[in-house]
Image (cartoon, rainbow, N blue to C red; front, side, top):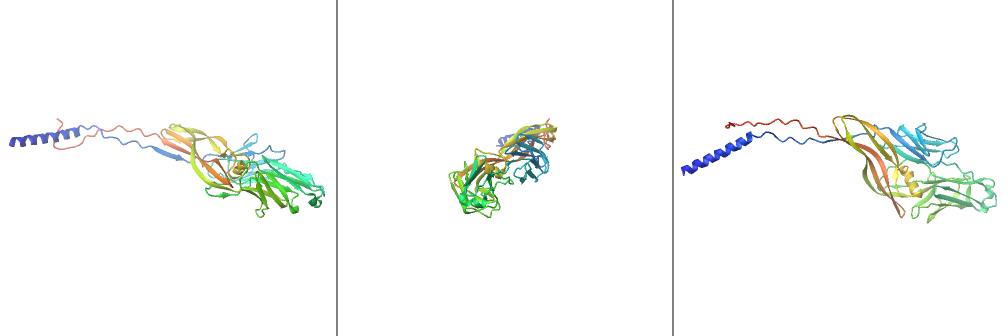
Length: 374
């Protein structure tokens, strides 16, 4: 019995010594995984702002298009580009007999904005002959307006000019808000002679291709008068009690907004100064045409435009970058008609630093008592 107890004691001591020796021979402790650092760079406030204005027609002699009082940096066809501009200033089109346009541009955190501006002169019209029917018409894009003043009403307007001018007025860009109803005026109808009154009212018929099943009506520019309207197929008939400037309104509601992003550029960064290039986008993309597209434009800017841009970034160490842009997929409803478009927003840049190289690990020799490696 004493021999068994002695052997057990020897085994226990041997096991303890073995554990101690194993601990003493541990060469290293595991180094923590290096941290990955991601930094969002504010390029919206450091990148110069660019405005792109697309005009509907060539400017006639004597007409000028300016932003904040300055002419465009470059002109390519009907596209006017203004570089290094201030926020919150006005685009002004005037002169040459065109209908004046004056609209404030809010960049709303973006560095590129694109808008459309109509270039159109008021029609000279036709001379009214008292006692005879007087008729005229006008077109803008795919829309067309017609009017006939019956002979019974023309004597009071004898020798005056009957004229219709159909165009689109520029308006400040709107922010997309889900659930909100908008009442833009994609088209405006200027009726001459201004102030002429009619009893009974004169019917002005406007054909709006692509507007089937939408909610459209007519009101005066101040929004205080809404003449009786009927809308059948693509024909909008408004009974005008007098002539002046009338807006064709489309009621539209944002039913759904899906927020996402789109990559513009990705690459590596070296230690020191880097040039990061990307093509920024502005405006919207849609399959819609006609009055629907004009309505989207009157609310949210031009159809898709892009501008090549670059920034310089000072990097400490090495890493990678990602330049990306906010994108909203917007669904809208007008009457019984649904449509959608993609709208481009602000840009961002994320910088990911490469993990720091781990320092050489110092061997760890635990201290202990009651043991020896000899």
